[in-house]
Amino acid sequence: MKPNFDLIKAEAKNLGFSFCGHTPIRQTPHFMNYLHALDENHFGDLSFLSQPYVVIGRRDPSSLHPSAKTAIVLGINYNTNNAKATKATNYGHISKYAIFPDYHNVLREKSQELIHAIEKLTGQDLPGRIFVDSGPVMEKDFAAMTGAGSVGKNSLFIQPETGSFLFLSVIFTNLDLDEEPYKEIDLCGDCNLCREACPTRCIQDNRTIKVDECLSYLTIEHQGVIPINLRKKLSNHIFGCDVCQTVCPYNRGKSTLAPVFFGIQPVLGQAVDIAGSLVMNEKLFVQKYKNTVIHRLGLIRFLRNCLIAAGNIRDLSFLPLIVNYIKHCDPLLRAHAVWSFSQYNTKDVRDILEKHQKIEKSALVIEEISFALQAID
Image 1 (cartoon, rainbow, N blue to C red):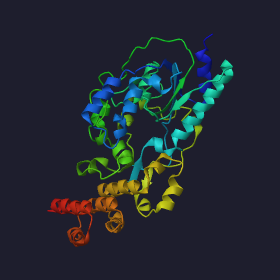
Image 2: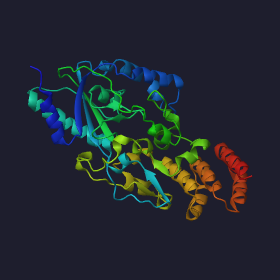
Image 3: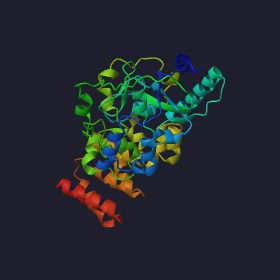
Image 4: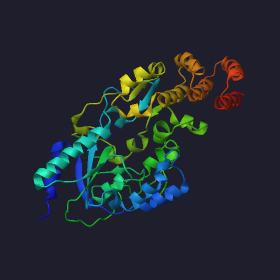
């Protein structure tokens, strides 16, 4: 006898999930789009996406858990008005999802709770494998295959009732559930607001993005120097970017939906104190951001992003802090400090940069100073 999925959905709702659906484990509808994106080579530092185990896992998802038949897809809304946010112009900005405790851990625990609940319902062990941004699983495609929504033009999954501010979890299970015919739907229609609003215009017409130009990638995943031509596009973004979601019609007026991230309260505000951040050491960074996704960024890249924001904001109170970073022991930070400093129209910029150029030993930083001096001319 096949399990009653309505009972499973009720258990998921009791746990606080915004939606729960299921679909047979098979190749997902946008697999070919993924292969096309590989050919275009816009994945930046995310070279693992072209590794054989990823391609094979996405081509044949059943290979990831051979005994599994069904994918249970869970979503939780995290769209909340953050009372700690501020409109102060000299602050940086982090994405909504980063204000909560690390969602990877929370969703994995909640998904495991659902597995236990299903085991009680069915009276049998459920050897499942949970994917929360882990493994070569196309979570957004699996979510769309449940019929709960569709993959939007910005490549994110949209559910009409909750929008796209969703964390997704996919459980591969051996449950044998009634299959419902999959019919791809398009919630976007002629709307192109996300593509028009994207700061770097990295959203392509096949529902993929040029990852190496996306602000979320640049501020989170990119390991090295931020390309000069994209630094101004970053504006005051410190961690991630919500622009393409903020303009989406399906996200309007839905910031008070309950439950929001299982009722777990934010541990951060979306506003980042740039001045306070630029005097952080490793200990202070860990104290503030432990148990959040920002901690995964690491202090150096966090400071790199803050320096770019400081250069774009051009608040004169930041200048002494930026100048100190020109002497920092890390060449990545020295390089970005040079660019940040060069954005300020002060009479001593050229003098300070020329003096430092004479003693600088890093080729990276020397090149950055040369670019800055040319721009000042």
